[in-house]
Image (cartoon, rainbow, N blue to C red; front, side, top):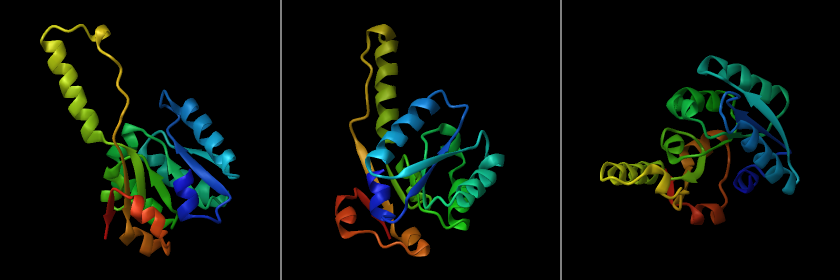
Length: 175
């Protein structure tokens, strides 16, 4: 939310784009609403269970006058990132994504754990299990590597100036 505030400082309402079928949806909504409230921002939830519902969710966010959007972490969204990014461009709304793959594909801004790191760690776990370790004995890991990726081409298309302080913190800036 803080990153969204930096790129869209005058935005009072942020749309939370969620998949209501995701098991984490309630926790994700609560966390995002608390973060927004702490920054003096309001939220509205828009939902899509499948790519066919994306456009209607964007229209709802625009009708409610959301000035920015936060995309929830969901594998369906990742698999449909090209369609999602095209709609964000069509509706000219700044969106913050949860992994670098979105920014690389043309999304504005992403911040989140490294999927590459997660797959690497999953491979290590599989190796341990194949060598006889019991899955219940293995520790639960949380991501330790987070990446901030900014797509300046998309920012320019949206008419957004990315603050220099944010550019300096970025792990990757796409020209």
